[in-house]
Length: 257
Image (cartoon, rainbow, N blue to C red):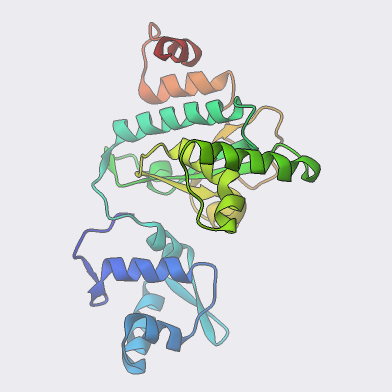
């Protein structure tokens, strides 16, 4: 889903609607909360609720309301220029290479167990799309007996490289955040999600499992489209229509060093 700057929804700036959807994700809220968020009266809030119910963006939850899958998708929408399909495929190809690099780095504290694409990238057959929604399943590499020591070591390594931490929570989240930053690599068209936190939603929309770490037995209700070694390289070749004369992923890595 893509939003256009200055576009209106229900007479309200679409970016403000998106902001509300993001803030309301995962919670139940009242009419008063909606009115306060948009600084409107209760009568206007009732009209807005009726319009959102009609468009299947929200659903009743007792005396309160909650987002539907469509509403959550709107919250994830990005106001960005569309991508060509070939460009999106290439970004996914490089993303999966970075997944392998993360899993091959013994200093990092999380494995990437699975990668799932959903949203427009998983469904569209057109030449353009606005963003690439990717969900990643992480798991800790070490147990609680070693976690604190190794996590503190990752924080110190980051500090030595010039990174500043403003709070204890930032330091606590760093072992995972550094992996997210490595995966995104400043490509803001890649919209990354934590599969462990958004599993229920992702299972309810079209999706494809495109990477599974060797040795992992999936127990989730996901489509059986697994891409792992050695099929990982074959999948990249098929998606990008690479010629047989092009170096393999491992050979290309050596050439780029």
